[in-house]
Image (cartoon, rainbow, N blue to C red; front, side, top):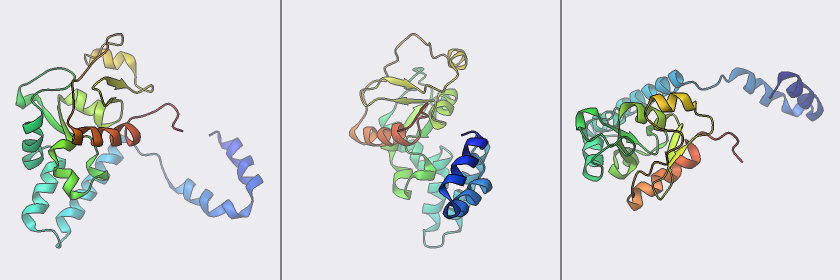
Amino acid sequence: MPKPLAKVLLGLIGAEVAPIAQAAREVKPVLADDIEMWERKLDDAVTADARIPATTRETIVQARRGQGTFRDRVAVIEKRCRVTGADNPVHLIASHCKPWRDASNEERLDGENGLLLTPSIDHLFDRGFIGFEEGGRLIVSPVEHRPSLLRMGIGAAEAVNAGSFTIGQKRFLDFHRNSVLLQANRR
């Protein structure tokens, strides 16, 4: 919202909006680097939580990084990148549908909360530039930069169908569509 319009609206609302206005001035937009910083802080919080057994703490942190138990569990369900078709495990990342930062410890390790994706597709999925419909059709965010997608191998005119998903994957992909996928205008 333009600052002049915001000032007018704040003036019309009155003094009771002052604490909200002050909080808004102190909050900065979340950038990709900020997401990584917060996820590292969550790693640290899990590592420091003595209520969680040591081996479970390590498993959870490794899962966020796309290693260990989570990757193994995703690989039982997924065999290739849903978009590019790449099937060499060396080139695939176990990507969370419901982001690590939003998931419970149990969800963080649930293989149905994951897809195997190539690094560029993982980036687009994690940042909300792409998603998947329940039936498998690739969804491209209306705010994505189309020339970049073309360079990453996603044609603008072609419809990509990623195939079918398990019931559990559909549940996690629903979260992704509603909370991660970037929309031009959320209602």
